[in-house]
Image (tube, rainbow, N blue to C red):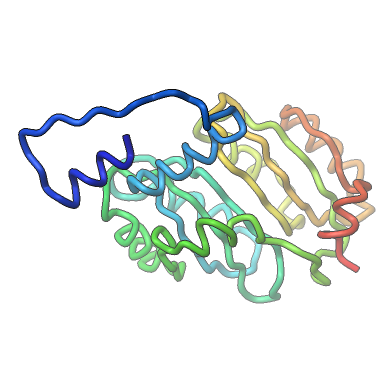
Length: 228
């Protein structure tokens, strides 16, 4: 179907009938998410951006508020990848739903008007195929980091509730989210929580009410992401 639609768009054909043969021989459940991702980007239902925000407390929340106020109505964040790496600037890889083709450039410019430099990666093959999976690594800045795996309800306001309940002295040092089309979202968050705040952090988790698993002692995390 994608090939037929592309052919019609390129050739600008009219009054012709096309047929697609569906057999399913080369398709399984493991490939369905890949197909969905390529369809979203290929038909420009998703904009991919690299956004630079100040590395300071409150910036993430302000970024989310800009997303919520984009022209054309509320948007869903389909992907968010971030790892602390610089003391002054944060570079985030973000996916945002669009209302049609050609909108990604407008979204990037809107971020710029709000003080967030944005690079449109919607048509960048390197970013789509590889870089979106490689954001991360060790960081000497991620001291006192606790790694948490949360299940968020997939509804507007779930992330802002999380950010609002956080102590202002805690910092998010890692964040990974990808929309999987379910009614809940799986989020990986690194939070810099001083040891003396352990009891307050436990109270925060209880008040938040989202299912979670702590992964701070996970051996894979210690090999590839934990600060050395």
